[in-house]
Length: 270
Image 1 (tube, rainbow, N blue to C red):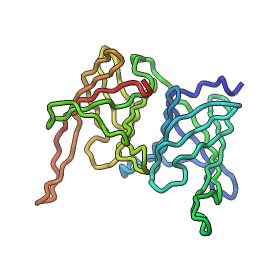
Image 2 (cartoon, rainbow, N blue to C red; image 1 turned 30 degrees about the horizontal axis):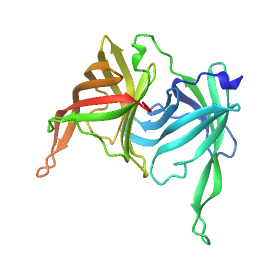
Image 3 (cartoon, helix red, strand yellow; image 1 turned 120 degrees about the vertical axis):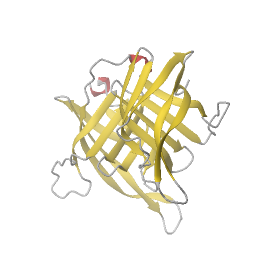
């Protein structure tokens, strides 16, 4: 039965039918586009990224469930801001065929009723997609799998670990092949920053290969960042130097440097 299908892991979009398509023909994205979806046991995140121009074209995520033969996404964050999808629960009919994950659903288009001032559904966009699994090579330690929430952080200018305010969520999703982190306002409509790529984890050595970064022009895209790493009492601590670009206020010239980050993560919901 469909409800027993395991969707956990990382997927890449292979084909889609645009919502405004008149002939319902399947289409593909160009080679410069990365379009991926990453699922842990109960969280998901997808993004569309133009790697040639280092530009995030779209992103969404939140929690998901599988019930009554449907795959259901509850949207907790979305980019670009101002989209109708944020806050929606979107059910998809889905099936697995020859290793391809097909799903079809409808996202509501919301707008304000001129008479009542209420936000109502005025239309819907059909979503039809085919996803193919990104295969794992088995080289990574599996103990990081799941969704983590940033608990505290320390940077070079601080002596004590600092917690984020309650309206900020900073999560990192780890699948067998990929990591994806998102830093967003959980009370508003803004993704502050995000990143994704492949990773390595073995013998307490954790590294990230950056394949998507937002905002752009950070100097991180394409980098391999190595971290010291440890997990104790359910807390994952990692520290390392990440590339950074700063701009001189007087000359406007860019300076490439690195920034030290020291973070403590806990399992989301724990």
